[in-house]
Image (cartoon, rainbow over the protein chains, first blue to last red):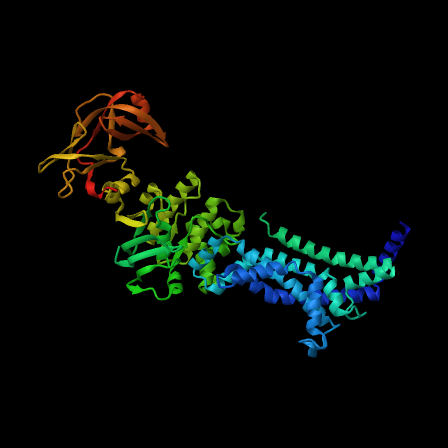
Length: 232
Length: 360
């Protein structure tokens, strides 16, 4: 118990004194996971909407791929990205191995399927007659899609939060392709693993509290948005 | 009323690879209210959706004399309201203005027009409310206001009252009838409710079994159905096999079972064995036979008394089954009971004769 209390005391001290290593890891996590999620939103939300609302050849296969992608093991993604950007790999000339770009790429591959799949579910959850009503009201196809996406905005927000939550808390892929370089590619999860392996529980606790705080804040934000939208 | 606003010819609608409804010819006149009436699954909603270009169709569809080459442009000149209100998760005002917003109408103008439509449907006081907080009746009023706000040249209504409770439905039907008549909006209404059709429409089209079976002004369709199926649907419960005994200038005498019945209706050409159609509302029940102007009076035994809303359905055995409808009050005052022998009478001018070979 002494070990735990000592670790907690040190963690609180590190947080209160805004420990530099802690801030660097938190910042790196937010930048990489934020970027990966943003890219996933830009590409995944329209694709998810198209899969949810469209009727075209290959749609079922794409939906199955998105659903499979939601359960991708991070280490498998890490392996795939590492091989791809390895110096002698197909994209070796980019020189992304052990960089934040590599982490963002791996996290994008982890977040995008979640956002695509859950966005498709979100737009499909709207009453199918609503689409017919919008068409009847004189909406163009694009106007209909925009209105339906707005109508399912809370579920899409949940999809985005699920994607962000998945990547900010993953470690395998980021460790494999980012190399855990201090001040650069060391993110909260890889730093926690490193500090724990060294027996630096105070530092590990501090990093874990910050990670949990970020996840809690995001979930609180999502919950607030959902509750705000409920009819009074 | 003036000319034809919408015209369908050799019009057929298929869903899931199967033809669900066909109309050889259907003309909708400008300013009229046409009810498409039929039982569940008859194909009336498919017909309405195809007329509104919301379903693919085969055949010709002309709007104001021209083929509809650009469905979006056509849809922006008409409006559709469905069985469910289908409002967006926004304020009532925004919902009412949605059709106008999609047409690129300026905010000021659409706010004004949406407000006017909400006033006409009696829900302007709800303008600031979230659509998700409305009752079913309020939401349907907003849905109708949204449709009327765009100033449609044709308003298509797909059973817009069927999800409402009876009192809400009755009030809304009355209010909508008043609004539509005041503005002379051409309306096509799908319903399976005869009372709704009578309240809201000038003409009635009967769709049964995927076919447009009869179209005409509401009174004539209800009084002179073209076949026994349509007769049954429009409430003519008595469709009796008859044989022509004699025809004079004034009256046709028919034999129904062992009774002679006199009618003024014309005998279908070349058919000596027509079907005699009598509406239950046209049959009068009396305790004792007495002198009346009714040419037909038959003694009958009451087999069953069935309350249906404000009326009682009386099933009589007059040597053939005969159904009469009387008010609850009349049934009570006459002290009607099962097994009683009463007199059923009906005027010679009321029955309608159908050709037997057209019976389904």
